[in-house]
Image 1 (spheres, one colour):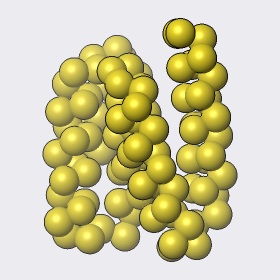
Image 2: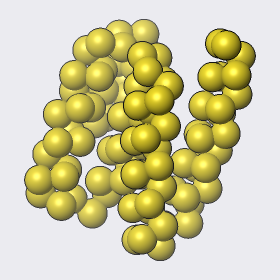
Image 3: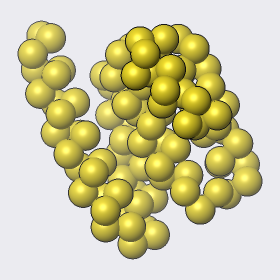
Image 4: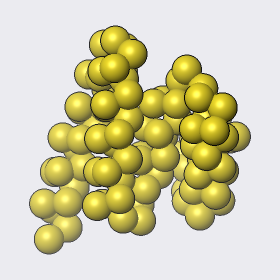
Length: 93
């Protein structure tokens, strides 16, 4: 579901992508999936098309989890995404 959502997002099918990634995030949380932070990262990326504040909140949770797991690559990636989100938000104001 997570991968499908990423493809749908790249194709511009944001609502359908959101539906799939939201469900994937719910399942990752319930099952305590070891890569939940990566699913949350994708959820936040898709949310950037809809709601900057919600995207920021999800990115922050993904960052917290990535730091907790010691996933340095994901931490750097999420920090870059947060910076990009801030730029986009500033540009839309």
